[in-house]
Image (cartoon, rainbow, N blue to C red; front, side):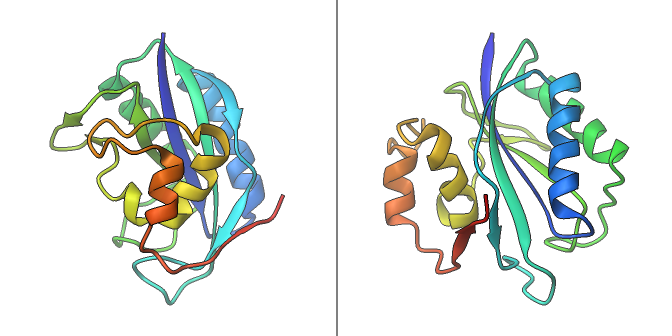
Length: 160
């Protein structure tokens, strides 16, 4: 059984409902959700002239390998109506693999651990709630240490 940490997020429409639907589809298509963080709200990152995002970190146990998992995640996003038009643009749902076991993968369509996670407070804050002691296999710091050292100035607010 493999363990993966995912980050879900979105800033369009009924954000909480879309995150709930993403959890449901991830559970059906990807593996058992064993932990889920609270929901967090953050101003848009990268392209700031858009609504704030809601994010949630998930721990899943899956029989899929990392490449199979990303394919299933992309299917979930498509089923939910995700359209990729603009980098960092508004979206109904975004699902990223942050960690997959302790693996280090670099392919044309998948990089694990997520290459920018240590620079994004909106990733680290919910992730620290469910996996504070998880060790980044490249940076050799825990999620809690990465959050403490994170240069991102954006405020991340727990909403529930």
